[in-house]
Image (cartoon, rainbow, N blue to C red; front, side, top):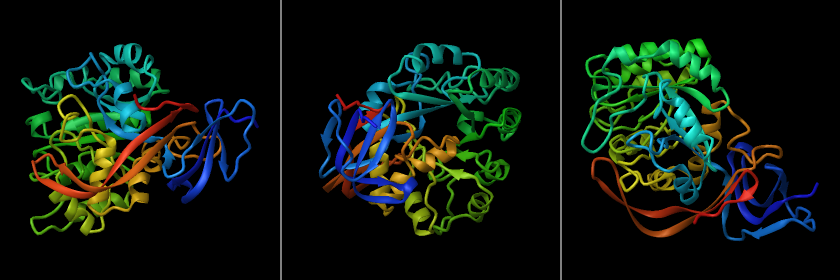
Length: 379
């Protein structure tokens, strides 16, 4: 086979194949076309020497907001993905059934970076989230649109990967778990997984977990008190272990207010790693404290996760959550996406959503991206 592009001599970390070692990765026709040592170079093959770099499957950021121009929190997906090593940005509920057509036509279909979406069960998605206006879209049951959500999800199966709902005092007011009930009905009707946001009570962390099904995702899972997943003594609450045992997935979803070092230390000390690492990047946190995907990954690395596990939580584990196993892997025939990373040593300042600073000894940086089999280096 004639390869279009070969990344040569990198340390390739691909948790989907349990691989960590020096090899080449090749691409042709938008797919991975070779994986191994000394792949053949044809007359038209572009070869890039990756000696000293780390190559991984294309990073998947499972929680972003990229409906730029359509919502107040949307960022530009291409600009973000180019510089943060992300090849698949998953928008989580920026749009609902009432405005998803605009999101698809003006953003998803025009973006170079791959965008998938969880469809919000609220009619207009997250429509009033800014520095000056905060109106939880789940506070008013009149905005819940289950029939329309089913119709839109069925019509956009190629890009809609699940249903999103936000519950908590800030997003659903006094509605408790009622919006979650409606979203679960949509998820059942469409056969799609659900992603649930949780903020301050009500409802409680335990109430939300009890309702989630195997394959559903709880985002903001490492959030601070109140509604922290750990006790005051630092123990992981039993409800989390019970939910994980039945297949519920736990996502970081850093964002503006949903990740605390204190919580993360207790969770990791209790042996409870996140299934997926995501930035929840949007207009109110892209300049801090979340910044981007590789910064969120760096925080987890400095908190004690192994590099292999950090990469797994941003590649193959995210693909499992999406139920799209050709993502997040460098197996031959998979999507032709890869990320080039470096792990730099030094003293790096990190901050969480509660203003706690941590000096970390390492930082993961993005050095380049292969998207659909072509080099798509940061600008």
